[in-house]
Image 1: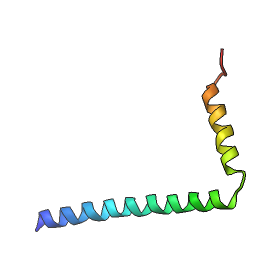
Image 2: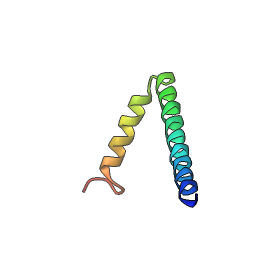
Image 3: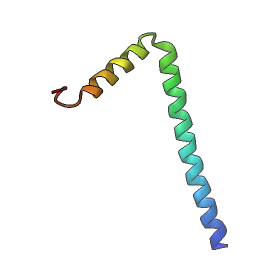
Length: 57
C-alpha cells in the first residue's frame, strides 16, 4: 500500500509539472501571436547575449 501511495505521489508531481510546462508554452505562443515584433526582440536579445557581459575584445 505504501508503494502505491508513493507511485501516486510521483505521478501527481510529474503531472503537475507537465501541466505548468504546457501552460507556459501556451502563454508564450499567445504572446508570439499577438506581438509582430517579438522575433526581432528575441534576435536583439540573442545578439546582446552573444557579445558577453563586457562585449567582444
